[in-house]
Amino acid sequence: MHARLMTTGTICALALAALALSPQISAQSGSAAGKGVFSSLRVGQMVEFSNDQSGALIITTYEDDDKKPLMRHKVKEIGHDFLSLEFDDREGSGAVAETRITAYRLSMLGHVGKSSRNARTTPNSDPLSDRPVKGKTGTTKKKN
Image 1 (tube, rainbow, N blue to C red):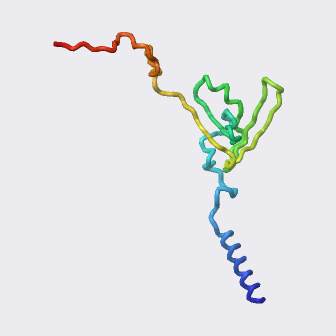
Image 2: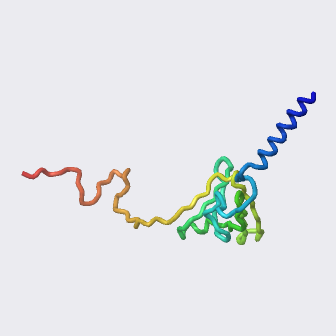
Image 3: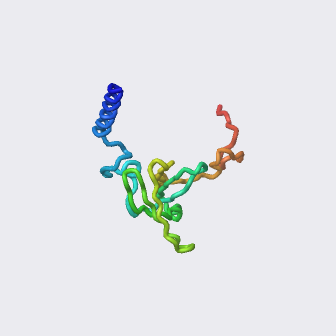
């Protein structure tokens, strides 16, 4: 009986020592200098907050002016493993809601930027169109 208690005490002491001397993991509190998953966001930035089909959370930012009205949530606080968003319903009830999201619940954090290419379309540029492009025919003449 004495040997069992001694063995159990030794195992518990080793487990406690291993826990105390282990390096910091992401779930433990500490310095949020890198901000982990949320390092691309900044406090005060507007984001779009939505859910996918399975209910997982999606946060998206846009650079295009046409998509800016979709970003209705403001980043209020950024932690190492959480993000706090504020929603101000100005058009509806006038209520203000704050949501805190953990990094483990987040499905996707995306950024959609502007294209640097000049998007010019040519007539009949649709690859599925069966109309011929102007100035081009389907037959070629053989030169002699």
